[in-house]
Length: 348
Image (cartoon, rainbow, N blue to C red; front, side, top):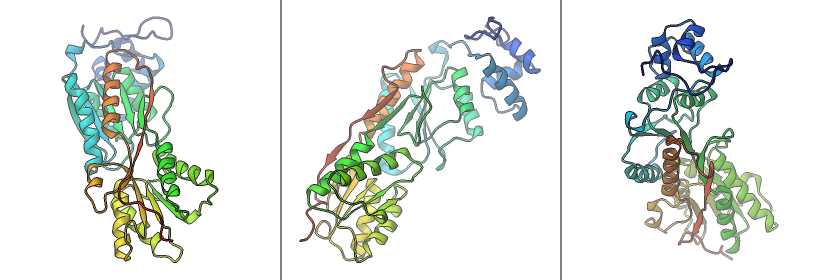
C-alpha cells in the first residue's frame, strides 16, 4: 500500500479511520511531508513538524503495524552516559536477549543528558528499530507520542525519575539494597556510618539513602546530617566526599558508597589519610562489578543484577514489538549483599 493511502489503526474524531492524505489536508501540507514526519526525516521545518504532529495526536493516528519481515531487526540501546564495567554488564544482557531473536543492537550515548536531543531522536525514527531501551534516560511527552504513532515500543532501565503510568521499566530493589548494606555495618557494631549516594535527581540514589536512613532509625541510631552525601557515582565523587568525611575529628567508622566506583574513591582517600581498611574504616559498595573482588581488600558490596535487568528489558521490548503486553510493566529485581574483606567491627 502506498504512503498516500495507508490507513491508521485509530479512528478520527468523526468515527472514520484517518489516512495520511486526510492528515495532510488538515495540516495544510503535502502528503510527502506527512510521510517524512511519520518516518522521522530531518528535512522538515520545526513549525511544520509541530503542526503535523498536532494533527496526528488529535486523531490518535497510528501507522498500521508493519510486518516483522519489513522492519530492520534492530534494538536501540541508549545510555545517558557510559562508564566501564557497569555499562558493559548492561550491554551483555541486552545482547543475550537480542541473539535469541536474531536482532542487532545499536548503541548510543547521550553525553550525560537524561533526555535525547530531537536531532538524535529524528535519526532514531528514521531507523525505525523494533524497540528502544533507555538506561538512566527518559523521553518527553512528544517523543513518547512519536514512538507510539510509529509502533516503536520502549523500556526504561534503572529509571532516573518517576515515569508516567504505562511506561515499562526494569530496575532493582534499591531501597532494600541500602537497607541491607547499612544493617550489615550496624551488625558489626558501627554507629558512626556515612553514606555517599549518587545525584539527588536520580530515583535510585534517593531510594538507597532512604534504605540507609530506615536501617539507622530502626536501630535507634541518629542520622548525622553531614554524613549524608550525594556524589556522582564515579571514583572522583567518592574520593572528594571521602576526604571531606574522613579528614575530621569525628570521622565515620564506616561508609556506605552508592556505587562500587565511589567506594574505590573512598578507599583512595582513606589511604592518603593513613587509614587502614577495614581496621580503621569499613566500606560497602553497590553494584558488584567484576573488579570489586580483585582489589585490596576485596570489597563488600550490594550485588545489583545488571545483566539480568538488561536481558529482562530486552525481552519486554520484543514482547511489545510483537503487539503483546508483558505480564508486568514495572519490574524490580532483587539485590544481594556480598560480604568480603572491606568490612569489620570498629576499633574498640
